[in-house]
View 1 (cartoon, one colour):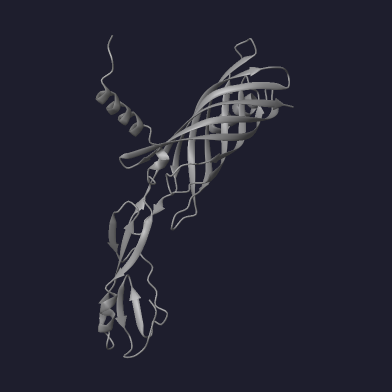
View 2 (cartoon, helix red, strand yellow):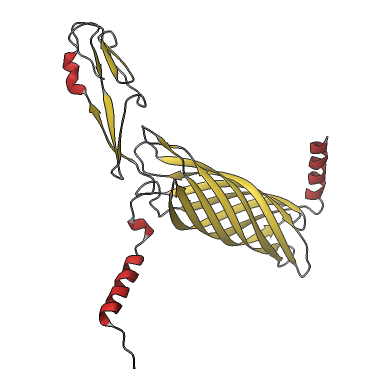
Amino acid sequence: MRFFSLLVFFYVSLYAEAAAYFGLSIEDSTEFFVLEDETRDASTPQYKVKAGYGDIGGYTVEASFSYMDYATNIFSENDGKALMLDITLYKGWDVGHNLYPYVDVGIGMGEMDVDRELESSLSFSSFNFGTGLRYVINHTYDFDIGLNYKLRTWQTISLVSHKINVTSHLVNPYIGINFHF
Amino acid sequence: MNYLNPPLLSLALTFLLLGCGSESDKPPLVPDIASISIDGYENVTLLRSVGHQVDLSANVLYTDGASSVTADELDWESNDTSTISVNNGHLTANANHGSVSI
């Protein structure tokens, strides 16, 4: 019953002043890889296309599709492109002056090309949260700036005699623009 | 006027340049398999009659220089189990003559 009540509350909140939007953002992704006691960082630009629905002064749900090209050698000499899908829930507040600060939480999954003996790609999943600020330019556009953190868990890697688990921590400052309709 | 000490300056520049090494200059963080070799195959000639047994193992060399020996983590397969069967690197002769690929 409590779960059902929460769903109804969320549904009503989402549709309060709901509008659909899509947008683009550019992120400067810094990713810290952790393997046992060794770490390595990689800085990679990330490009995101997103579509969402909701009230930016309340709750918004967003699906986004991101692209990164890893010019790194974390998993192989030729780490390649990565594609990601994220689902994010935003909670925003209207603080006046066309400003809408928000916090967000979400989950994601993706796959990255690698050049390894036993794997040509590695999948991963992530838990995301962040914060940001939207500035509503007019009824159609808003400008978005924020900071996102992702805890990424990579596919277990087989080395025949044993397996390796890699995690990474992403910190993504980003800017973007959204088109409302 | 104070001047920088040339040896100290060159030492500092050396450290600075060393510190500028790119992350991409390093080998991959996650080691990969460089090669796998089979140990014990010379003993296969000891499989002279039904019931004789020989153990094989795999020596895995990694790109970071480490290595490990394993048998049961690999999938072993015989193309003629009526001649020689294999299980976790453990070969058993099932015939007195024949040729198989493991």
